[in-house]
Length: 415
Image 1 (cartoon, rainbow, N blue to C red):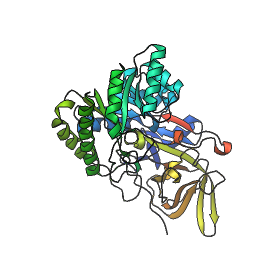
Image 2: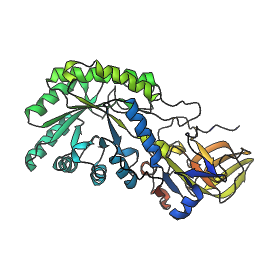
Image 3: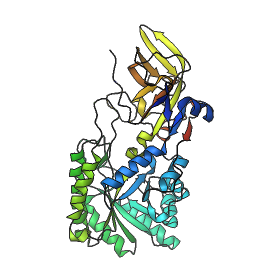
């Protein structure tokens, strides 16, 4: 029995039966890039998401989570259009600074920061989101040693989580952040030590599709920030509310009502406690900004029949697009949105499984989906490949060639 694939995002069209990406034919892009596999990113789709956010969230900063997609040309394009970049390693920090972002607009989170990373961030003037008291002590000592005043914020492990989130980042015992009840004492010690106190980072989870769950979490986050600030006696200059905005990857999922979330947050901020009146607020987004903008193109090398089933064996796979294979957080494997890019929009004629070229049964891009009849040489498109794609995949596994990446259709006008 065939299995459904996820919904292809709106806005994709074809020319003479070939998928268009950024206004150009997929086969022409592959030829220009020198072959497959190929990730194609359309910044026009990112621009649409940024515009939608700006309309929905009045006077809330937009930060980009670089881990979602650090591809240099795309990062450079995004950096000039958002209010901040959030990174999780020294490598990402270097990429963020290299994109043209000012150091004061870059924040560095993540557990297990080495002394070298802390020192590099302090020297660069980047804000450190501290994940624990020990990290705070090391940062203060390193700052004193190099003679700089460190920009320090505290990542808070809240006592709640986003209901129904795909990946929980708070609300229980966790390596991320400082338990909320211990935060005020830590903030007081940072201020007493003369640090440049930058505020709170409160991140409860990701990949949420229920607007009411995000509304509830954001209200709780604002209330928690006020309570911590009062107890610490230090109003936070900035509260990063985290993100959590999800995308519908799988059959039956519905898009997030971002406008509902924005309206509710506006109400919560308008009524926020006095101690938070001078505070600025930010939302940190990754996949919601770039996920729909990416398409992974891979070519069918062989059409194979085996015991009554049809397999399209491609030159790509999980070493480039781990998430689509189901090995990046799925408990029960479900199909990403896929299509035959060179027969886009043609009626489905047969059931087939799309698999990669790796010597492992885990290398599956789609199981038992209905497709137009396809042959060797046809291109397969895996959608929603703009976030947690190439950089989140085991590229060195089995030493196959790396995938190519390409930015197309970039608007020429300044931000």
